[in-house]
Length: 365
Image (spheres, rainbow, N blue to C red):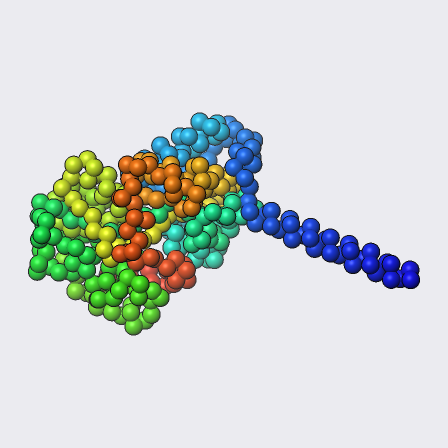
Protein backbone atom coordinates (compact mmCIF):
# COMPACT_ATOMS: atom_id res chain seq x y z
CA UNK A 1 0.00 0.00 0.00
CA UNK A 2 2.86 2.36 0.88
CA UNK A 3 4.50 1.72 -2.45
CA UNK A 4 1.25 2.49 -4.25
CA UNK A 5 0.91 5.83 -2.40
CA UNK A 6 4.49 6.74 -3.28
CA UNK A 7 3.86 5.90 -6.93
CA UNK A 8 0.72 8.10 -6.96
CA UNK A 9 2.70 10.97 -5.41
CA UNK A 10 5.51 10.50 -7.92
CA UNK A 11 3.07 10.41 -10.83
CA UNK A 12 1.35 13.58 -9.57
CA UNK A 13 4.71 15.36 -9.30
CA UNK A 14 5.68 14.33 -12.81
CA UNK A 15 2.36 15.60 -14.20
CA UNK A 16 2.78 18.93 -12.40
CA UNK A 17 6.34 19.23 -13.69
CA UNK A 18 5.17 18.65 -17.25
CA UNK A 19 2.41 21.23 -16.81
CA UNK A 20 4.95 23.72 -15.47
CA UNK A 21 7.39 23.11 -18.31
CA UNK A 22 4.64 23.39 -20.91
CA UNK A 23 3.38 26.61 -19.35
CA UNK A 24 6.89 28.05 -19.20
CA UNK A 25 7.58 27.21 -22.83
CA UNK A 26 4.23 28.71 -23.84
CA UNK A 27 5.00 31.96 -22.03
CA UNK A 28 8.51 32.00 -23.50
CA UNK A 29 7.23 31.41 -27.04
CA UNK A 30 4.88 34.39 -26.75
CA UNK A 31 7.66 36.85 -26.11
CA UNK A 32 7.56 40.00 -23.99
CA UNK A 33 4.53 42.24 -23.74
CA UNK A 34 4.75 45.88 -24.81
CA UNK A 35 5.12 46.96 -21.19
CA UNK A 36 7.84 44.38 -20.53
CA UNK A 37 9.79 45.49 -23.63
CA UNK A 38 9.64 49.10 -22.49
CA UNK A 39 10.71 48.20 -18.95
CA UNK A 40 13.64 46.18 -20.28
CA UNK A 41 14.77 49.09 -22.46
CA UNK A 42 14.90 51.44 -19.49
CA UNK A 43 18.13 49.88 -18.20
CA UNK A 44 19.88 50.87 -21.44
CA UNK A 45 19.14 54.58 -21.03
CA UNK A 46 22.23 56.61 -21.95
CA UNK A 47 23.69 53.88 -24.17
CA UNK A 48 23.86 53.76 -27.98
CA UNK A 49 22.93 51.38 -30.81
CA UNK A 50 24.13 51.34 -34.44
CA UNK A 51 21.21 50.88 -36.86
CA UNK A 52 21.78 50.31 -40.57
CA UNK A 53 19.29 50.74 -43.40
CA UNK A 54 19.03 51.63 -47.08
CA UNK A 55 19.30 55.43 -46.98
CA UNK A 56 17.13 57.82 -49.00
CA UNK A 57 13.42 58.32 -48.41
CA UNK A 58 13.03 54.91 -46.77
CA UNK A 59 15.58 55.57 -44.04
CA UNK A 60 14.12 59.06 -43.64
CA UNK A 61 10.73 57.44 -43.04
CA UNK A 62 12.27 55.04 -40.51
CA UNK A 63 13.97 57.98 -38.80
CA UNK A 64 10.66 59.80 -38.38
CA UNK A 65 8.61 56.73 -37.51
CA UNK A 66 11.02 54.68 -35.41
CA UNK A 67 14.47 56.08 -34.69
CA UNK A 68 13.61 59.51 -33.28
CA UNK A 69 10.62 58.29 -31.19
CA UNK A 70 12.79 55.47 -29.81
CA UNK A 71 15.56 57.86 -28.77
CA UNK A 72 13.08 60.29 -27.22
CA UNK A 73 11.19 57.63 -25.25
CA UNK A 74 14.12 55.56 -23.97
CA UNK A 75 17.07 57.97 -23.96
CA UNK A 76 19.10 55.58 -26.13
CA UNK A 77 21.16 57.10 -28.94
CA UNK A 78 20.70 55.51 -32.36
CA UNK A 79 23.70 55.95 -34.63
CA UNK A 80 22.63 55.54 -38.25
CA UNK A 81 24.62 54.04 -41.10
CA UNK A 82 23.79 53.08 -44.70
CA UNK A 83 23.49 51.38 -47.06
CA UNK A 84 22.74 47.87 -45.86
CA UNK A 85 25.20 45.37 -47.27
CA UNK A 86 25.30 41.63 -46.60
CA UNK A 87 28.85 41.43 -47.97
CA UNK A 88 29.94 43.94 -45.32
CA UNK A 89 28.21 41.88 -42.63
CA UNK A 90 30.16 38.83 -43.76
CA UNK A 91 33.44 40.75 -43.78
CA UNK A 92 32.83 42.13 -40.28
CA UNK A 93 32.01 38.71 -38.85
CA UNK A 94 34.96 37.01 -40.57
CA UNK A 95 37.41 39.58 -39.17
CA UNK A 96 35.78 39.73 -35.72
CA UNK A 97 35.27 43.46 -36.22
CA UNK A 98 31.49 43.85 -36.03
CA UNK A 99 30.43 47.50 -35.60
CA UNK A 100 26.79 47.18 -36.74
CA UNK A 101 24.18 46.18 -34.16
CA UNK A 102 20.94 45.86 -36.14
CA UNK A 103 20.58 45.88 -39.92
CA UNK A 104 17.61 46.19 -42.29
CA UNK A 105 17.82 43.54 -45.04
CA UNK A 106 15.43 42.10 -47.60
CA UNK A 107 13.42 39.32 -45.92
CA UNK A 108 14.26 36.74 -48.57
CA UNK A 109 17.81 35.80 -47.57
CA UNK A 110 18.59 36.41 -43.85
CA UNK A 111 17.86 32.80 -42.87
CA UNK A 112 20.45 31.65 -45.40
CA UNK A 113 22.91 34.23 -44.10
CA UNK A 114 22.19 33.04 -40.58
CA UNK A 115 22.71 29.38 -41.41
CA UNK A 116 26.10 30.32 -42.80
CA UNK A 117 27.01 31.72 -39.37
CA UNK A 118 26.77 35.47 -39.99
CA UNK A 119 23.67 36.36 -37.94
CA UNK A 120 22.43 35.95 -34.38
CA UNK A 121 19.26 33.81 -34.03
CA UNK A 122 16.16 35.73 -33.00
CA UNK A 123 15.15 35.25 -29.37
CA UNK A 124 11.38 34.74 -29.44
CA UNK A 125 11.21 34.79 -25.66
CA UNK A 126 11.84 38.53 -26.18
CA UNK A 127 10.23 39.20 -29.58
CA UNK A 128 6.51 38.46 -29.59
CA UNK A 129 5.65 36.86 -32.94
CA UNK A 130 2.03 36.05 -32.06
CA UNK A 131 0.52 38.59 -34.47
CA UNK A 132 3.32 38.82 -37.05
CA UNK A 133 2.80 37.62 -40.60
CA UNK A 134 4.33 34.15 -40.46
CA UNK A 135 6.93 34.63 -43.19
CA UNK A 136 8.30 37.68 -41.34
CA UNK A 137 9.15 35.77 -38.16
CA UNK A 138 12.18 33.81 -39.30
CA UNK A 139 14.92 32.05 -37.42
CA UNK A 140 17.29 34.95 -38.03
CA UNK A 141 15.02 37.87 -38.98
CA UNK A 142 11.94 39.80 -37.90
CA UNK A 143 10.00 41.85 -40.42
CA UNK A 144 9.58 45.60 -40.41
CA UNK A 145 7.66 46.44 -43.63
CA UNK A 146 6.09 44.93 -46.72
CA UNK A 147 6.99 46.45 -50.07
CA UNK A 148 6.87 45.55 -53.74
CA UNK A 149 9.30 45.57 -56.62
CA UNK A 150 7.16 47.25 -59.25
CA UNK A 151 7.52 48.57 -62.79
CA UNK A 152 7.39 52.36 -63.17
CA UNK A 153 7.32 54.46 -66.34
CA UNK A 154 7.15 58.07 -67.46
CA UNK A 155 3.60 59.09 -68.38
CA UNK A 156 4.80 61.85 -70.71
CA UNK A 157 6.56 59.20 -72.81
CA UNK A 158 3.77 56.61 -72.61
CA UNK A 159 0.43 58.45 -72.17
CA UNK A 160 -2.82 56.79 -71.16
CA UNK A 161 -4.00 54.31 -73.78
CA UNK A 162 -0.45 53.81 -75.04
CA UNK A 163 1.16 52.82 -71.76
CA UNK A 164 2.45 49.50 -70.42
CA UNK A 165 0.03 47.58 -68.20
CA UNK A 166 2.15 44.70 -66.89
CA UNK A 167 5.74 44.01 -65.87
CA UNK A 168 5.83 41.79 -68.98
CA UNK A 169 5.72 44.98 -71.09
CA UNK A 170 9.25 45.75 -69.92
CA UNK A 171 10.27 43.24 -72.61
CA UNK A 172 8.18 44.84 -75.39
CA UNK A 173 10.84 47.19 -76.70
CA UNK A 174 9.08 47.70 -80.04
CA UNK A 175 5.85 48.97 -78.56
CA UNK A 176 7.55 50.72 -75.63
CA UNK A 177 10.99 51.84 -76.82
CA UNK A 178 13.56 53.59 -74.68
CA UNK A 179 16.27 53.14 -72.09
CA UNK A 180 15.51 50.86 -69.15
CA UNK A 181 16.85 50.18 -65.65
CA UNK A 182 16.68 46.99 -63.56
CA UNK A 183 17.81 45.94 -60.10
CA UNK A 184 21.39 44.64 -59.96
CA UNK A 185 20.33 41.56 -57.97
CA UNK A 186 18.28 38.60 -59.24
CA UNK A 187 15.16 38.48 -57.08
CA UNK A 188 12.62 40.77 -58.76
CA UNK A 189 14.15 40.14 -62.19
CA UNK A 190 13.35 36.45 -61.87
CA UNK A 191 9.74 37.33 -61.13
CA UNK A 192 9.40 39.80 -64.00
CA UNK A 193 11.02 37.38 -66.44
CA UNK A 194 8.59 34.63 -65.45
CA UNK A 195 5.64 36.97 -66.03
CA UNK A 196 7.15 37.99 -69.38
CA UNK A 197 7.43 34.28 -70.24
CA UNK A 198 3.67 33.96 -69.79
CA UNK A 199 3.41 32.42 -66.32
CA UNK A 200 0.47 33.21 -64.07
CA UNK A 201 1.60 34.96 -60.84
CA UNK A 202 0.39 31.98 -58.79
CA UNK A 203 2.52 29.55 -60.84
CA UNK A 204 5.89 31.30 -60.55
CA UNK A 205 6.97 29.41 -57.41
CA UNK A 206 8.49 27.06 -56.67
CA UNK A 207 11.24 27.79 -59.17
CA UNK A 208 12.70 24.77 -60.93
CA UNK A 209 15.74 24.41 -63.17
CA UNK A 210 13.46 24.44 -66.22
CA UNK A 211 11.85 27.67 -65.05
CA UNK A 212 15.23 29.23 -64.27
CA UNK A 213 16.45 28.32 -67.76
CA UNK A 214 13.41 30.14 -69.16
CA UNK A 215 14.20 33.13 -66.94
CA UNK A 216 17.67 33.50 -68.41
CA UNK A 217 16.33 33.16 -71.94
CA UNK A 218 14.08 36.12 -71.22
CA UNK A 219 16.86 38.06 -69.52
CA UNK A 220 19.08 37.55 -72.58
CA UNK A 221 16.35 39.22 -74.64
CA UNK A 222 16.11 42.36 -72.54
CA UNK A 223 19.73 42.73 -71.41
CA UNK A 224 20.84 44.91 -74.39
CA UNK A 225 18.14 47.46 -73.50
CA UNK A 226 19.05 47.82 -69.81
CA UNK A 227 21.35 50.84 -69.57
CA UNK A 228 21.54 51.02 -65.76
CA UNK A 229 21.64 48.20 -63.22
CA UNK A 230 20.62 50.05 -60.06
CA UNK A 231 21.87 49.15 -56.59
CA UNK A 232 20.54 51.82 -54.22
CA UNK A 233 16.80 52.18 -53.68
CA UNK A 234 16.73 55.88 -54.56
CA UNK A 235 18.35 55.33 -57.97
CA UNK A 236 15.48 54.18 -60.21
CA UNK A 237 13.09 56.93 -59.12
CA UNK A 238 15.80 59.52 -59.73
CA UNK A 239 16.67 58.02 -63.10
CA UNK A 240 13.03 58.37 -64.11
CA UNK A 241 12.77 61.91 -62.77
CA UNK A 242 15.94 62.92 -64.64
CA UNK A 243 14.68 61.26 -67.86
CA UNK A 244 17.73 59.01 -67.93
CA UNK A 245 15.37 56.08 -68.49
CA UNK A 246 11.73 55.77 -69.57
CA UNK A 247 11.00 52.61 -67.61
CA UNK A 248 12.48 50.99 -64.50
CA UNK A 249 11.91 48.38 -61.86
CA UNK A 250 11.84 50.00 -58.43
CA UNK A 251 10.68 49.75 -54.84
CA UNK A 252 7.15 51.09 -54.74
CA UNK A 253 7.65 53.50 -51.83
CA UNK A 254 10.53 55.31 -53.52
CA UNK A 255 8.45 55.89 -56.66
CA UNK A 256 5.30 56.84 -54.77
CA UNK A 257 7.25 59.61 -53.05
CA UNK A 258 8.32 61.33 -56.30
CA UNK A 259 4.84 60.86 -57.77
CA UNK A 260 3.40 62.77 -54.82
CA UNK A 261 6.00 65.45 -55.46
CA UNK A 262 4.61 65.88 -58.98
CA UNK A 263 6.82 63.64 -61.15
CA UNK A 264 5.05 62.33 -64.33
CA UNK A 265 5.49 58.69 -63.33
CA UNK A 266 3.08 55.80 -62.83
CA UNK A 267 3.35 52.48 -61.00
CA UNK A 268 2.37 49.13 -62.53
CA UNK A 269 1.33 46.56 -59.93
CA UNK A 270 0.35 43.80 -62.37
CA UNK A 271 3.13 41.21 -62.20
CA UNK A 272 5.03 43.00 -59.43
CA UNK A 273 6.97 41.08 -56.75
CA UNK A 274 5.47 41.32 -53.26
CA UNK A 275 8.28 41.35 -50.70
CA UNK A 276 9.39 42.83 -47.40
CA UNK A 277 12.27 43.96 -45.22
CA UNK A 278 13.43 42.56 -41.91
CA UNK A 279 15.78 43.48 -39.10
CA UNK A 280 18.75 41.19 -38.41
CA UNK A 281 21.60 41.19 -35.89
CA UNK A 282 25.12 40.45 -37.17
CA UNK A 283 26.89 37.62 -35.34
CA UNK A 284 28.96 39.15 -32.55
CA UNK A 285 27.15 42.51 -32.58
CA UNK A 286 28.49 44.59 -29.67
CA UNK A 287 24.98 45.41 -28.38
CA UNK A 288 23.10 42.21 -29.18
CA UNK A 289 20.69 42.34 -26.21
CA UNK A 290 19.71 45.96 -26.90
CA UNK A 291 19.37 45.18 -30.62
CA UNK A 292 16.96 42.34 -29.80
CA UNK A 293 14.83 44.67 -27.69
CA UNK A 294 14.79 47.27 -30.46
CA UNK A 295 13.51 44.61 -32.87
CA UNK A 296 10.87 43.54 -30.34
CA UNK A 297 9.77 47.16 -29.85
CA UNK A 298 9.44 47.99 -33.55
CA UNK A 299 7.31 44.84 -34.09
CA UNK A 300 4.71 45.89 -31.50
CA UNK A 301 1.29 46.62 -33.04
CA UNK A 302 1.25 50.18 -31.68
CA UNK A 303 4.64 50.85 -33.31
CA UNK A 304 4.90 48.76 -36.47
CA UNK A 305 2.37 50.78 -38.52
CA UNK A 306 4.20 54.08 -38.05
CA UNK A 307 6.52 53.76 -41.06
CA UNK A 308 3.38 53.81 -43.24
CA UNK A 309 2.81 57.41 -42.10
CA UNK A 310 5.82 58.50 -44.12
CA UNK A 311 6.18 56.10 -47.05
CA UNK A 312 3.86 53.67 -48.84
CA UNK A 313 5.12 50.48 -47.27
CA UNK A 314 2.84 48.25 -45.20
CA UNK A 315 3.20 46.80 -41.67
CA UNK A 316 3.93 43.17 -40.83
CA UNK A 317 2.01 43.02 -37.55
CA UNK A 318 -1.58 42.04 -38.33
CA UNK A 319 -2.88 44.21 -35.50
CA UNK A 320 -1.25 47.23 -37.17
CA UNK A 321 -3.19 46.97 -40.43
CA UNK A 322 -6.16 49.07 -39.34
CA UNK A 323 -3.86 51.80 -38.02
CA UNK A 324 -2.28 52.64 -41.41
CA UNK A 325 -2.49 56.32 -42.32
CA UNK A 326 -5.36 57.01 -44.79
CA UNK A 327 -2.89 59.00 -46.92
CA UNK A 328 -1.41 55.77 -48.27
CA UNK A 329 -4.45 53.51 -48.28
CA UNK A 330 -4.90 52.36 -51.88
CA UNK A 331 -1.18 52.75 -52.55
CA UNK A 332 0.23 49.96 -50.37
CA UNK A 333 1.48 46.58 -51.61
CA UNK A 334 -1.25 44.88 -49.60
CA UNK A 335 -3.86 46.68 -51.74
CA UNK A 336 -2.70 44.83 -54.88
CA UNK A 337 -1.98 41.32 -53.59
CA UNK A 338 -4.20 39.62 -56.18
CA UNK A 339 -2.15 40.78 -59.20
CA UNK A 340 1.32 40.32 -57.74
CA UNK A 341 3.72 37.41 -57.29
CA UNK A 342 4.15 36.66 -53.60
CA UNK A 343 7.87 36.08 -53.14
CA UNK A 344 8.67 32.68 -51.65
CA UNK A 345 11.09 33.60 -48.84
CA UNK A 346 11.69 29.97 -47.90
CA UNK A 347 12.81 29.15 -51.47
CA UNK A 348 15.13 32.14 -51.66
CA UNK A 349 16.59 31.59 -48.21
CA UNK A 350 17.58 28.10 -49.33
CA UNK A 351 18.92 28.97 -52.78
CA UNK A 352 19.89 32.65 -52.63
CA UNK A 353 23.68 32.11 -52.61
CA UNK A 354 23.48 29.72 -55.56
CA UNK A 355 21.25 32.02 -57.59
CA UNK A 356 23.32 35.11 -56.81
CA UNK A 357 26.40 33.31 -58.15
CA UNK A 358 24.50 32.25 -61.28
CA UNK A 359 23.18 35.79 -61.74
CA UNK A 360 26.59 37.44 -61.38
CA UNK A 361 28.11 35.03 -63.93
CA UNK A 362 25.32 35.91 -66.37
CA UNK A 363 25.77 39.65 -65.86
CA UNK A 364 29.47 39.40 -66.66
CA UNK A 365 28.86 37.69 -70.02
